[in-house]
Length: 185
Image (cartoon, rainbow, N blue to C red; front, side):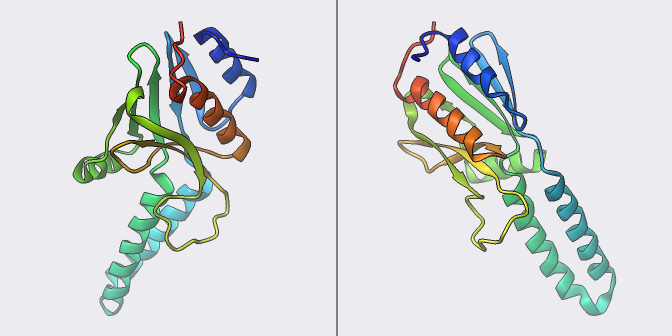
């Protein structure tokens, strides 16, 4: 079934009944809001408590600093996908920002784009796990990151999904309407 206008596109997405992330519709736009996993929040709080315990003990100060550095790595890889993403089909742009202020600051420091025009998009796909998870650690819950790659820049994480099927569905719909340059009326 071909999707010809925004209402059909909206219907196709509503049929999927996504739980995480939450998808809301505006006038010719979609707002995708990713929610954190409970396990990630619990793990992050736990590792910060351990690092504070090490820091207050002078004999383990080095280990405390090491645990803090590791915890920031895990913080970044676990929460970089918690974006609020607005795909506006009228302006033909994708605008996203992270729910956590510190990650928005990190993006500004490294010059990561937070607004992408449809004409700049090379590919839209998804990847299991985090882009910067070089340790290849086993996660209690898999996550599938929605990635957008432009012609001039590397892939940027736009959102995250709990289920691979959800990520495949949204990627195929977005590819149909953004990459194929279909006009949504």
